[in-house]
Length: 360
Image (cartoon, rainbow, N blue to C red; front, side):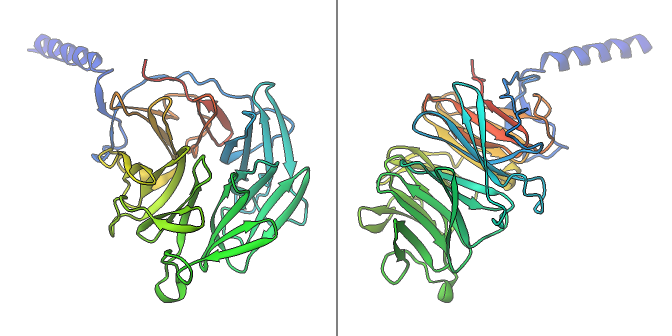
């Protein structure tokens, strides 16, 4: 009998080892809502060296963007709310592998930045955070300045085509061009912004690559067309369609995420792709960033501790995390961005790398 038991145990171990590479839920304490993904034991990531005198000891990258020359600009925060070591703008020369740091002046009250936008004429606009502020920082030719408002700022976006900065507050959306300011709300547009009456404000702003502004406001989606706001007439608008995230995809389209964790790729007049059937388990509650890369045909989702890469054509998912790579923190806080060569970059707590092709 004992020999039979040893034989059965051996067969069971052999069967389990053969299933190692099969599609199966990742082991996350037995949570049945976790997504299906292919197990990859080890992912070799080519990290950018962050051991540079221009960089702080703790570097939490919160946003990054590529300029017209292909160079990378980054902003971030310190390790805690009281730590202002991340209170700076960083420039990475990709071709020469060199860093520059542009710290703010001592009188700036910020403890870091959570969003970065670039103009075509050399200005950088930075949204302070993670707490809410009434100012936006502006960096130009080595000098820092601020643009102030009368209320806390929810979001901002820059339209390089018209050289306009858009800023969302409770009172509406400001368009700033040079010294001129214009406020859009329910009084002069179709935007349902009347915070005193219904508590409505525009929580998400994004400009696509042509400069068109997109706005997630209440449970509706809008865009600015030449001189006025229009509602997106074929977006999946409903009480469940509350846009919480907007990201530019290409010249005339954006990626949206709603409060019910569904994703859509939209142009101004149609739904280009519907990703509402994708399942990411409970991880989207900790979502930090997302992007859609049309060159690689991939939807990339960055959460607190996992980076999901979904290949659309193959309908296949890969995951990068602490367990299968050399990510230096158990809660990496993934941020993602597309460069001008079709590559996808990921960053977080003390790391920066280009995402390798995981679907060969």
